[in-house]
Length: 638
Image 1 (spheres, rainbow, N blue to C red):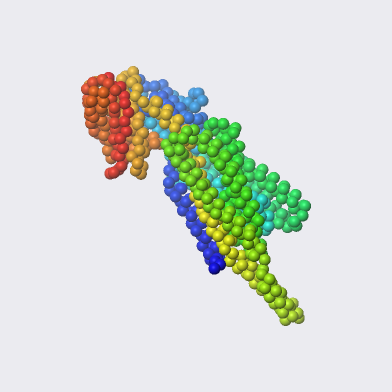
Image 2 (cartoon, rainbow, N blue to C red):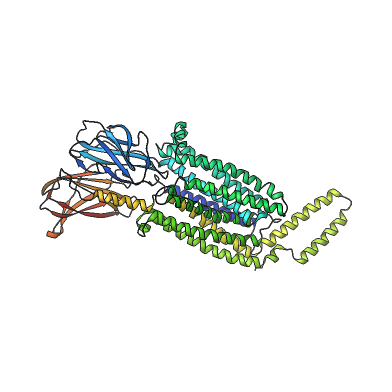
C-alpha cells in the first residue's frame, strides 16, 4: 500500500523541527552561566590564601595567555572593601600583569578582583584573597565583576548561535542550489531560506556588535547602548572581525541578487554555464571570508600553531555549512518545492556526494582541532571541553548513520524517478482528450477558455504533486532528512557551547599551575597553605577548598578554611570538616570542626599537632543534604 503525505503532514513536520530548535536554544541558554574563560589564571603574587608578614608593594597576576585590560581590570580591596591599588595595571612580562599598592596597609585579609578579555575574545573574571600579618573578617561580598554572565551573557550566547545558524543556512543553501539543483534558484521557498540566512547573520552580527561592550565589561544591560563602549569595541580584534563580517555580507547580498535574479532568467547554454562558474568562485570567496571572521578572533587565533589552525578552522566551518546548510535546503525542497518544479533525484544524488566530501573534511579538520584544544586523552573526560566534544562526536556519528539511510532512499528514488517524474500514459491521453473537448466547447468564448486553462493547469499540478507525494521512496527520504535536520539542530547547539568553553589543554595547564603553587609550602613565617578542588557530584557541587594553618608547627595552630566556586567566588556550604592523620605513626584521624565566620570562611583556634611529620589533611565538604565529598593532601608540619 502506498503511503501519502498531506500538506498538513508537511506543516506538522516543519513545526516539529521548529519546536526542537526552540527547545535546544532554550536549554542552551538556561544552562549558560557566565561564559567560560579561555584564558586561565595560572599564578599570582602574593599567592591565593597566603599570609605575608609585610605588605607587598604590588599584586601581580599571571594568565595562560595574553589578555586585554582597562583601568579597572585589576583591583585590590582591603578588609573594609576600600580599593587600595594605585595607578593603572601594567604589563610586566608577556602574560603577567601587575598593579601597585598604596603604602601603609594594615593587617587583615585583602581581596584581589580581576576582569580581563582573553586573546580569543572571551571575558575572564574572578577573585582571590591573601592576608597581611594574619587573616581577618572582610566585608567584601561576592567576588567582583560579572562580565560574560547574566542577561547580557545569555543574549550574547543567543546571538552567537543565531550567527552560526545564519551562516550555515546562507552558505549551505547557496551551495546546494549551485552545486546540486540549479533549477532550485527559481523556487521561492529556497530563495526565502537563503535570504533568511543572510538576514539572520546580518542581524546577529549587529546584535553582537551592540552587546560586545557590556559583555566584556560591566555585564549591565543598560551599558548596551553606551556609544563610548561601542567605540572601544571597534578598536579590538573582535570588533574588527564583526565589521569585516558586515562588509562581506554586503558582497553576499549582491551574490544573492544575481543568483535569484539574472541567473534564473538565463537559458541552459554556454553563457549560463559561465555565470554558474563565476557565481561559484565568488560564492566560495565570500563564504571563506565570512568563515575567516570567526577564525581570526576566536580559538584558532591563539594557542598552538595559529598559522595552521586558522585555515583549518575556515575549512571546518565551510564543511559544516555545506553539509548542514545543504541538508536544510534539501529538506525545504522536499517539502516545499512546487509541483511544476519537482526536486529531481539527480539533485539528491549530487547532494549526497557533496555531504560525503564535507564529512571527510570535517573528520580531518576536527581531528586536528581536537588534538590542538585537548592535548591529551585524559582531557576528554577530565575537562568540560572534552566532555562536550565527546557529545559532539556522538551526534556526528548519529548524523552519519541517519545520512546512510538517506543515501539508501536516494538510490531507490533514482530507480523510480521515471515513474514519479512522468504522468502515466492513460492520464496523459485522458487529459489530452479533455483538452480537445474543452477547446471545442469554448472556441467562441476567449474568457471562458482562459478560465478553463487555469483550471486545467491547477489540476495538472495537483495531479503531479499527488503522484510525487505518493511515492514511498520520496516519503522515506523526507523522513530521514527531517531526522538528520533535527540532529543537526542539536549538533549546532553543542558546537556553539564548545566555542564558549575553555579549551581542555588550557584548563589542565591551569589546574597543574594551581596545584604546584597551591601545594604544601612553608613561607618564612611558617604558615601552610593547601588548595584542593572538590566535586560532590550534585548540582552546584564543584569548588575549591583552601586550608591555612599557622604556624604549621607542633603544638597549637590557627586554622582558616576558605571555600570558593570554580570561578573564584566565595561559596557557602552547609558543612565543612577537617581531619589530620599521621599515617607513618598510625596517629589519627584527629577531627576538627571549624566555626563558620562569614561567607565561604571557617576557622578554628588551638588546633593541636602532636608531633612533626608528613600529615594527611582531609577535608569533607557537604553541599546539600545528600551530596558530599572528601579531598586530601599531604603536607610536612613541624
